[in-house]
Image 1 (tube, rainbow, N blue to C red):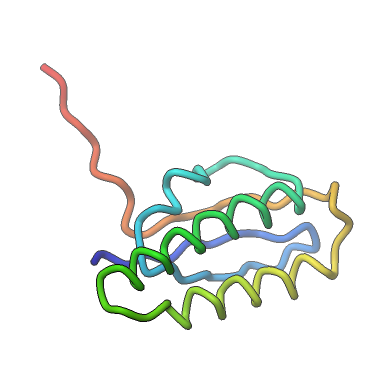
Image 2 (tube, rainbow, N blue to C red):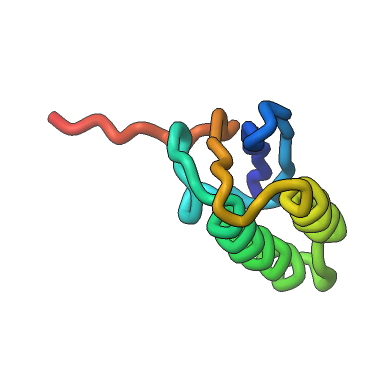
Length: 101
């Protein structure tokens, strides 16, 4: 199962690197997009919950790293107003670019 990291900038300028055991985060967040803190928490929680479930289905146990990332995001979000803005700076690995001819 491919894993990934995504990097965000919080409203106070802090940059945080987050881990996901699945590329599913690409379905919920986009590089360069800005989300309110609440929307970011909701989107990242949804993605990381799906990622953890994928681990559970494949290996028989939930991903504790995914749960830790969710807690890390909740702690960081608590320092900001729900309407403040978080920017997604990077996702690695990026999704492959399809070449059309």
